[in-house]
Amino acid sequence: LRREIEPVPLTRFAAFLFAWQHLTPATRASGRDGLRDVIRQLQGFELPAVAWERAVLPARVDGYEPRWLDECCLGGDVAWGRIAPRPGGGERTQAATRNVPIALMEREHAARLRRAAAPPSISPRARGVWDTLKTRGASFTQELAVAAHLLPAELDRALWELVAAGLVTQDGFAPIRALGAGTHRGRPRSRSAPRGHGRWSLTGEPLDDHPEQHWASLLLDRYGVVFRDLLAREHAAPPWYRLVPQFRAMETRGDIRGGRFVAQVGGEQYARPSAVEQLRRPVEPSTAPICVSAVDPANITALFPQGPRVRTHPANTVAFVNGTCLGIRQGSEQWIDEHAPEEVKQAVQAALRGSRQLGRTPR
Image 1 (cartoon, rainbow, N blue to C red):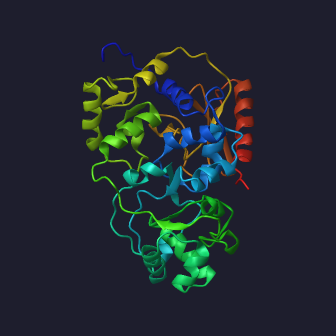
Image 2 (cartoon, rainbow, N blue to C red):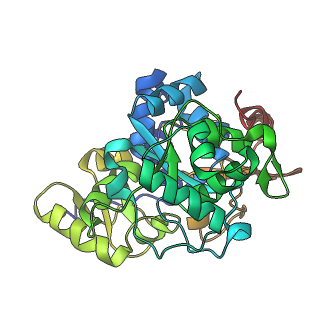
Image 3 (cartoon, rainbow, N blue to C red):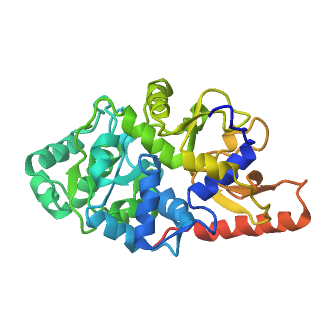
């Protein structure tokens, strides 16, 4: 089976990944059910909070409506939070901003995705709120303010600190949307306070001490084809050396394929059979650019040995044509490959201009 496979170039893999992750016009999801499919595929991937509704979800779901995500969260289908927090040192370093890493996930899998970490260092005020939630259970913001004996502004800072530490979450997505509305000196403005309609609760302890099997399946669903270098930004996933035995066992059972599917990258590679079939299917060249945020899991520019580099910041955008990066927008600066045909340059420029509109925070 391995000898039957002819590896494809990285550009072909990039084009395949855009279709696999609902980023092409023909594969985009639609409606609330489509949004759930997208979240199921991306769950466990931590992104800057502001990027979810500014770029990542609208790029995959036609006519994306923020209320769909609210309904999924408040209905108990979807949860959000940090799943691989890094130990910090007090309130100043733990204050949440619009770039705090947040993952979306199906609520039933949240405990299995969460990774155990050393207890973070948090301020006494945040510790008091955490103790209150531990005693009272899930609580509304107003209830917490009374029980913890804190003014609204003090409670807001404590809650954001606990969010950044990966210790609390809320039923609704309103707090994360509020982070994108504006910050002041690294903290949310008072108008961005986490009011919402949901209840705050503790994230809880990880459910599984050995989540490799679950993660192996999840990563195959996310990328179709997996290899070590592709997972460099999968901060919550187990290390590659712990995933490989799971992939080998799945290959032995005939559940997945092993071999060399993508050229220009080293190490072992594993794939879903449906992904192998789609990867090898002939594709008609197109001049239509596909724009993704620099923080999007589908942005694989770092895998190319040569070519432009883009800083992984939610404000930056990368434009691909037929799997090749031909344009980048970083802040106010823009780069377009001078060797591209003129009509392609114009299309890339228009796509990068359009990505600015896509990147606005939903209301």
